Length: 326
Image (cartoon, rainbow, N blue to C red; front, side):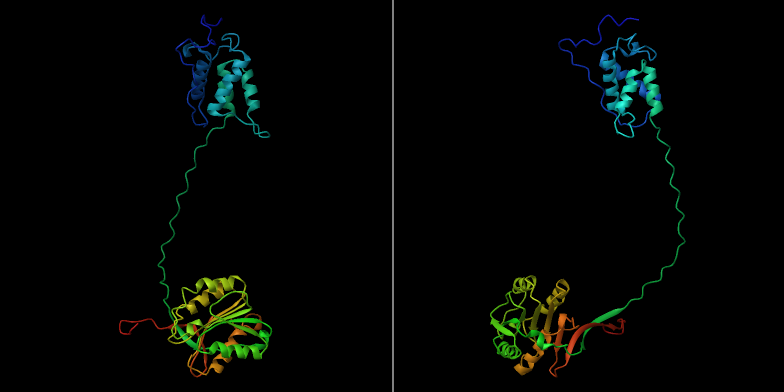
């Protein structure tokens, strides 16, 4: 048979838009009828032949004058629409395009595609889970704790470890810093009294909360104390006392001790009205304990008027009842 009188491959006349391929569709496995419908549409668009002239059994080259170049173009458009099997080694569909371009009929193209395209298996319904037997949960037993000041062992002091160390003392304005400086000098340390905390020392004792007219130490002192710790200062004591503006220093010490586990960070409550030499002795013991000097890692301690060392610990407490005040 010969091609139609109007050459299907000529360019469209003036005012006519060039034919375009149908919009892409999902690349899912298709039935033979769906593939044939798509093939006929692409051949119609690419060649200009009316669809009713495209008998699936016609020879593409002998009957429709569709040469090998045009067949490759048609197969390429088909591949863009539905995808073609890929070579498992190269991951390319070139071999499939070559095989399809050698097939002479539209029926043969459709048969090849449907044969080489896997079908989508029916989804296996998920098994219905068997409900677990209902169990009556046992309510958790409630417990209650409270934080108490409890007696603690004396600090495992090792004053000899302070020999030769540069120790900064933030002044308290009441003479305790001067008395502590004298005690440190007697054991070979090198104390320096400062108006505020600063890095660059092997230890720092901040007594600013003991100043008679002091404003609250925190939060204003936080940046300086943070800088002291991040600079690698291995010993930091924060000294407070009853009625002093040191609120929050014990909490700061507990948090910093966790954040800087390699440093001795401790808040110490003392009795500012006690003998300064006795206070200095207590602070030297605290400054030289813990870390490499011992095993005491308490971050919050206090001294009573009798000189007993205490620490804050959670202890069991009875649950309140309607007849017992909480």
